[in-house]
Image (cartoon, rainbow, N blue to C red; front, side):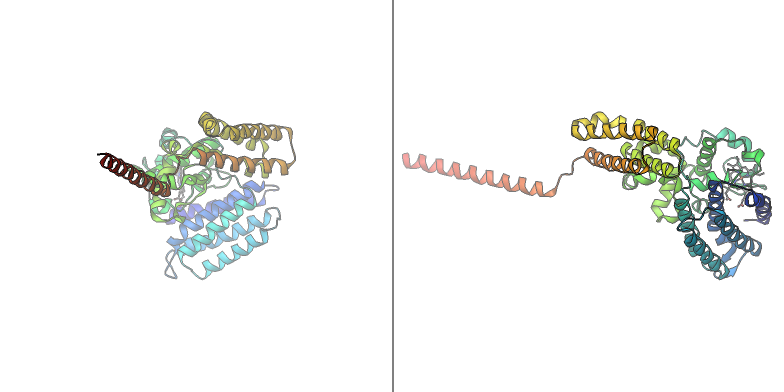
Length: 398
Ligand code: HEC
């Protein structure tokens, strides 16, 4: 990270002070801003310190300030059981940075804190709709971003490269989206991204995510079937590739840069389960409308296309599922008790997982082959005995 960016970042922190001073910034805004800063700490620390030595003093000082700011933001968040633990973890992170600990240690700690923060404050880190192709926002990218970041994310004098796989692996898709939200990140002035809708920001995050994997071959379908959680939302949006092992890390980089091609690889019922999980997060956070729209999306895109197929395998389960969907819909609109709604969402997820396993191709057990071989040998033996007996009878008759 060059001095220019650091100055810009410093400026952004100064200009962000009003966010802290605002009378009543929503807890979503505070948590998203904290998450954004933590992602920068995780990604940039390796450029500031190496082998216990400072490589880049201004960046190092900036990171210390960023931890302070995160602490300040967390202090402003509503006090919930768990907030104290979060503050202690932040103090521990600050100590790690003071001690010039290794980049891996700092990155893991910062990422773990961001995850805990998201759970504690029900931060919405995944969109409620399918992600478009990277080409969808390419014209906007070329118009507004390429001047600083280069036409293919190769970087320029006024902006860093966005195609460096190692650095980009440190950001989740949500982190990229977050950098494009002027409320949580002020590196980009409002005339660059201030007017963009949520959908446009998510789509731009995908465009950016496609740069490091441009012209790369898709990962093996083996990986796709082993990790369905990373092929759909929310996993694809919230996971930082840097936290995964090597082949899976590259796979996630490719999948999130090509979500339009990945959609067909995700088993629809797995997608439905993921969406219901998101619906629960929305609901717990008080966003009933968001929960409702995800419930309907899960029904339309995950369950309905497979209903007929499932009907052939297990009619009773389909009938049960049908009742569960309807019940939940009614409960969400009608304002049933939260225990009922949450239990309903969980039961539905369990049944959808069951349905998914029913649609898997039947597993042929090896034991069956053994039995078939034994029966076959018995039949041959029996045949031979009969044949031998017949021949003897014939002979004795002769
Ligand atoms: C005026 C120049 C400029 C424009 C225009 C611009 N950016 Fe940036 N962008 C920056 C700077 C500077 C940074 C901060 C780099 C840092 O701190 O590491 C940045 C950071 C980012 C990051 C975080 C990645 C990282 O390595 O820190 C993303 C993602 C990003 N920009 C995407 C975009 C997108 C998408 C657009 C268009 C909507 C855009 N930028 C427009 C200058 C610009």
